[in-house]
Length: 486
Image (tube, rainbow, N blue to C red):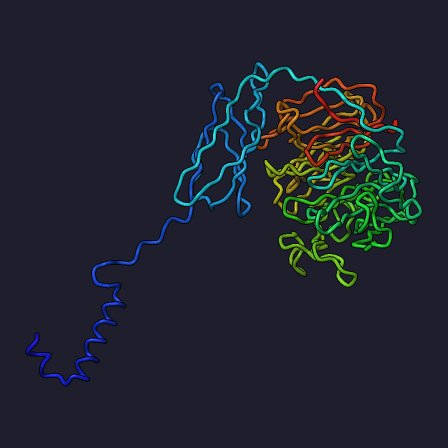
């Protein structure tokens, strides 16, 4: 080698050595290879114990990238994106009674290249008896109750147009907002609900659903006062949407709620009268008898809302229909609720005369036709037979004659901490009979309908839910009750 190199002039020799060194560096320094890329996903081993043979559990796992999966038995979930995963376990029913899970809710961190673990143990539930604890009185037709995320206050809507605040157990004398000059309580009109923006703590936005003086539906954005957390800014109104509601003063629906996708949903009635004579509920070119879905996260006067991707009629000429519509075929939804852990949507729809119903579908399922006025509940409406193709049938119904009812009042799936035996059960009532009932829903089937023996509380106007997911019943007597252990 030395003999060969000696033939090269010194400048050329230096250049040759530099090239050799550069070649070795580019090759990684000889025999060392680049390290193989590390794993990018992890696993979660979920152990579900305490269940008798043949009894399925109900554990819903949610996590990053909208991950959601319901387990009925022990399993290992693989290919999971790293991050925090939440397990929500619901009570299940056995022949001898309910089985309650422990813990009801837990969070587990999944790391790339590792397997995390979590366990849920079912055991015979202690006998749960429910009662009502009065939290407010002297209200004028309390029609709705809600709270901002993470807030300890209760916001109670009076149908005549006032929003009252309960703070530290005291009903404040000064309303949070008073729009009584903008609405009327004729028929079923009035201030019907409100929804706090998911980022209310930072942006102060909340949304109203009310009827104006001509009877049309108004969805409006407002903002809290800059200097007083218990007072709204009276000059902050921005109209999001006005929906014509001509001729009749009933069937307004009336619930606003933000879904787990961050979009604003609104349930509208069919326009009133009996039987929906204009067939509004089945007409996808009008917004009555619908569940609407709007993007209000960047609302301006010029563009009050946008159409979220995934709305079934979002593309012009695609399927024919208004792009705001998420679902249709509703008579008078009073009320609906999202159960985020199970990724289910519950809609309580008031019947015409015979059947009251609760519909349950996956949260992300667009374009559902809930059947009105082709059907009332599970029965063909005004005909011996009807074409039921493509219609969503109710999860449960009840007959007004046998249940002493007249109009369903929909509630929520219980996800609070105070009553773990009630976890996963949907609570509902009836305006006339005022009973409190619940049922469980899993694997596409409703079961374990239970009457909780609640009586003598007046007409039940609505349910409410606070920021801790505890539930309330609002009575026509002007009182608000919290559902508690008796």
